Image (cartoon, rainbow, N blue to C red; front, side, top):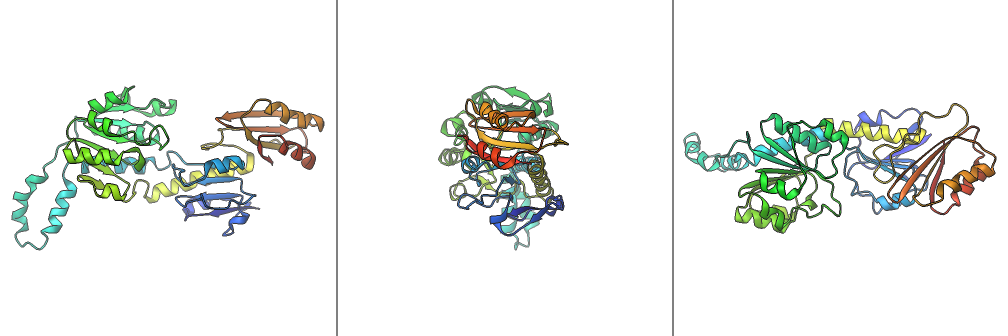
Length: 388
């Protein structure tokens, strides 16, 4: 029996996929797998039996990645599972930044007790006049699962769309409309477009990328949407751009004290992936990935170990999975351990990603468990050995 612990409420559409070989447990110390959404894990004492953490969502800032890597715990996320939900909200945010909708609603509520409000509206509405997005230029910063969908939707709405992503994947490129202009320099995008939406992860290279200089390059009256990560935008720079009118509106999904003080900011309470469908999609994807790893050692959408599909489980023999550091002579040492035990390796797959690597070996016989596993575990740089 494999025990799975949920740190957050996970959609039953996901947990119902668990077979009779699994059992949900409230006892973290027994967990071989953890399912999580937003719960902070940095201060948790992870059990020795933990093999995998699956985040039902894209961001993994709440998970201690390096600690998990050192312990040979594979961390999964679910990129693209909530993309449609975020895309739809971004399209709605384009309207919020264009048409004075929020200001108009606030005026109506403030004048709700006026018996002549119907007449007063005709005079007041001039101050909320906006502009249409048809024919306007939208700059999409980051063309991953969400950015690509936003770009396509904006094209369908009649916008002239420009996309910037130096690391755009082949899959994203194929999924995007041919009408999207691919821009190779961010400065060019900033100078060209009327509206901007950012969809990149918060990493060292992107944190604070929308700074004073970036804002200065934008057209006067630009609208900037941030439904990715709050740290991508320098708050002081954006506040100053809004105050001066350089940026007409900043629509963000991240309520922080700094943003709430900004003039011209429209702030939402992190609603990007808050739909029933998105939660179900993320949960199902997370559970499937975790089960595939626990049952046959396959890794897909891991954020700390390389993608690897070792194929179907061998009909005869056993599969040994070794999570280790990406260092020279590792494969030779692993193979030697089996050779000295007179065990033949029928198939081997090795993949590396940055500092860590993953090796799966299919044996032609049952694993001589204790002796070889002990020898493998004694190799410097080996983080975990699993026998399936």
